[in-house]
Length: 455
Image 1 (cartoon, rainbow, N blue to C red):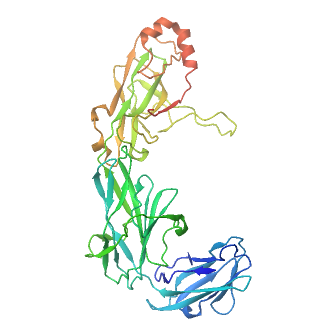
Image 2: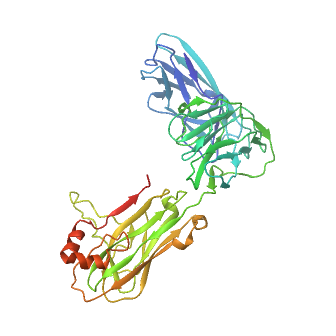
Image 3: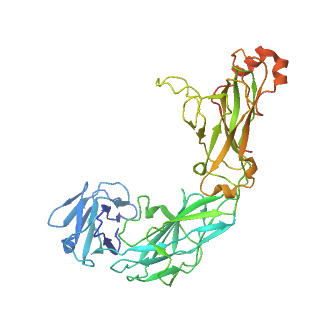
């Protein structure tokens, strides 16, 4: 049986936090921790570090805690001892030993200890930004660590996380997550004194798909006892690396930053986002359906947060949004509408949508009323953000015109078209007659959203 705790534990001084002390007990093969007792003697750190017990742990003598375990598992991680930070009266660097004694139901015992320190190193990472990386090829991330704090770090951990690229599992002293986002965790036992900086002697390597245009990688660096983030769980890193060890080499304390965890990666991949619109054909008083939106012919992908599109109806034309959703929860499904404002007759509408992979489109079929004869034009226009205007390979198709072709006198009927090619041709209207047009309109629901992907 064993009890596992960090050899060194640092605590915050100026910014106290509630951090669960990482304690893992193991009853050994064929046994469980049910009925076992963990005694934690923290009397040496009283007045230096503030501790708090909850749930299965209680405080008996001053700063001596007893935890009675109720899990039926062989291995159990305890979350019931909380570190509230350094005591306000403690000098930075003051420390003491906390002793752990694990006693099983059969009387077997295991012991461990950790040195708790009032104060903490302040570990900064390299400030990195990668531009013009070759799409679909490996990308190297050269990181490092700088201690800007008042006390030395006995070692440090680093995590690298990528949700849209895959980490190469190439280092033998790192472990990798088997599922979820691609993640690596490495620990270095090198002591980092205040003011010292080290660079990794080799890069972390990530690789994404050919369509990737923009993404990011997260790198977190922390000393033992520091908060590694709300989603860090060391037990999830179960896959060992297969290559040589990742090492450290001294470097100048330049190019580091406190907020360095977010590493943006821009590739050299391009997109071609085309606006979709067409002709409004009818007579004054008619309501005409038209498909409007965007199409991405690739070869890269663009995420929704990097674009929107605007609709400007022609003069003399009223865009009629769908009816607003019914407050009745049992009503029919609400019509699709991703634009604002939600009012008819506005001069301009701004619309959002979903991300567009290569070959995908994001369109909706909207109703336009022809109020009067008009020779003007409106448009659908792509509006890029995040530098994507420079990535677009054909800026000439970022705007599509909405043209009006009005003939004859209107009778106010809703002569709808499916809008795929700018509306139903007038010659076809004449050939099918009014009843045929209305029959077609009846099967085209308003507010239809079209989201297409190639293949």
